[in-house]
Image 1: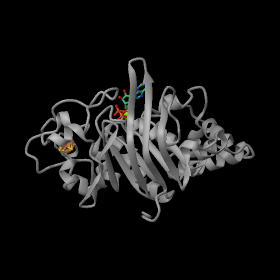
Image 2: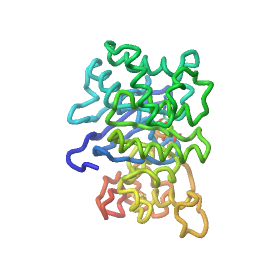
Image 3: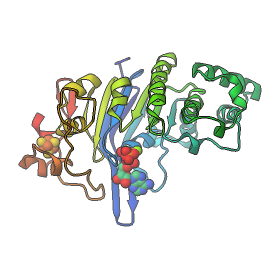
Image 4: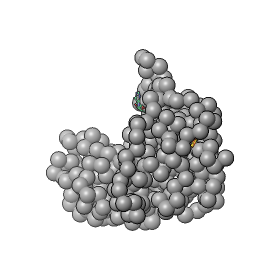
Length: 321
Ligand SMILES: Nc1ncnc2c1ncn2[C@@H]1O[C@H](COP(=O)(O)OP(=O)(O)OP(=O)(O)O)[C@@H](O)[C@H]1O
Ligand code: SF4
Ligand SMILES: [Mg+2]
């Protein structure tokens, strides 16, 4: 991992969905750096803003979602202010995204080979069909899939195979950054483990930087170098993966880890965290976690904590002032 200047920097990013009853602030002032070659696990309970953050990076938010303020610097260029042409070229060749359910992204009417040809030619119309298929065959080979399967259709493939095809479609344009949003949720446990192993191999082979969005802390334990914990549209804590598991600072991270089986083997009993994530139309004042926090103090109800650095982590919590 290159820890020189960051490949991607989010600066005070705010993303909103204006809806009939108000405005959902799904990402609320997120600042984060990502370095070339690292795998960043993005975790947090449902509704905390993980997908919204992931989608906003290549500006794939659907209306009414919009980036209200902040910057997304990719190698120094601000994606938020990028023109359409530059954005399209960036999405094709530098930043790729894969989602939970490959079936919604693959067209049942077309062969797998056709999907690859379309992807390559949408980016560079000068590439012949034959050449695109040749490139597809070599990408498939790195995914452990025989080239003959390019003639098959999505419904002829298992869920794990389809997910590998989605990765292949993302990799064929040699991206730098892969954003994978819950890529294994639709897979069974064994296929999921194989898929994560594959991702680890590909990351080295293609020199990928990966943002892995997941509910499953086991997945990030296996793959991530660093972890970002999101809560209520904000970053609760960010730090090196192993250290987050061993010495979580933020009370939310502590609660999250204590409520997940097989992670903290030293915990005799699982505890569930009381309460649920906040309504992002009208989030709590001060620390957004304060209504659920076992260590809440008076300040927490009034002032929003910035990220404080401690033990190589950053935690948005007044306990570390
Ligand atoms: N299209 C939309 N319109 C209105 N609100 C939205 C929309 N998409 C997301 N939201 C809201 O934004 C907030 C963050 O949602 P998001 O999908 O980013 O969370 P998440 O962390 O990815 O959750 P999950 O783990 O369930 O996928 C939620 O309050 C959600 O209701
Ligand atoms: S700032 Fe206060 S309420 Fe928020 S996590 Fe820290 S102790 Fe708990
Ligand atoms: Mg999501």
